Image (tube, rainbow, N blue to C red; front, top):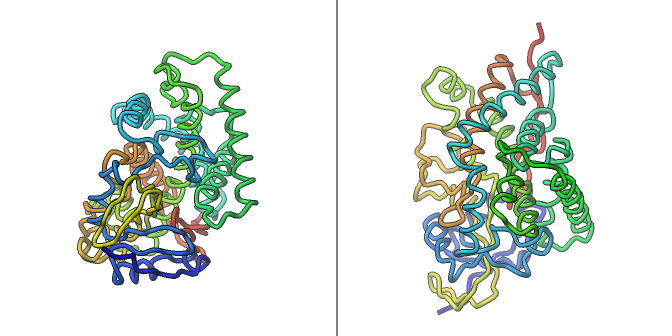
Length: 388
């Protein structure tokens, strides 16, 4: 058995574009240790897919992890029966049936209203003026925190995910994260003081009906906000940008030769809005000749796995006609994203088709900068269209 190869990163450059480093890591060794992150990174798609399921080794229970410390122990930071029981409790919110019969109509109504406020403007930033609002308004309803604004939802989500990725230990980032969780807790308290309607399918409602303890209820709502705002926001704006920069592929979708879901899934593979998931090593383990010890920190690098040349014919290109079935965009194993059905419906059945239908001559009006590696997406997507 041997020690892992060390790989040095420039954190600022890694945030701007992690892919050159991830390619070099894959070429160097199956497991590399990155001193700047104090973590072992697994970058092969097949290794991630296989090892993520071994929860007895790669545990999601991380008492000293950033997410647990900052947001409480949610179901994503539990394994086994503890995880599955809370996952079952929230299923009435996220099930395919609930999405079809309840959420789709709500999503279409809120998106219609947002687009009605945009069409006469002639230009906007797709991130701030469209995707943020669609994602935020949807998440208000999904969580049950209808006493927040969409802008507030976006702000607290960003502050929490910044906190969860704050491996440099920036105290200002931590303070902002604590402020966000206090604001969310205040909104939860106010909503718990109100009657819950029988037809309410929100996370707050279904967890309350399931008799879940308030600490877990609060932690799971924060989890939903941390992932349910920025990831759909970034995927809506990012997929629109990808299609606008590949007009032939946009035409294929609009002509029925491909689907909006294919476009979203290929974008999620290519850019990976969720680029990483952390694990705690729970027992001594050898992976590809590398010795991992208890309490070591391991990062499952979905962003690298999603561009693995062993599985994708054009890994570094946006090509919605290539087979992306092997992608890890929603994770794998028992922690596969519980909100996957909701995300696919909001993005591929509502936000993207309604945007391009309402603004048929939509075009880019400038560069779209991207950032992030644990969570990655466009910082802005300036666009314009004609106004009649």
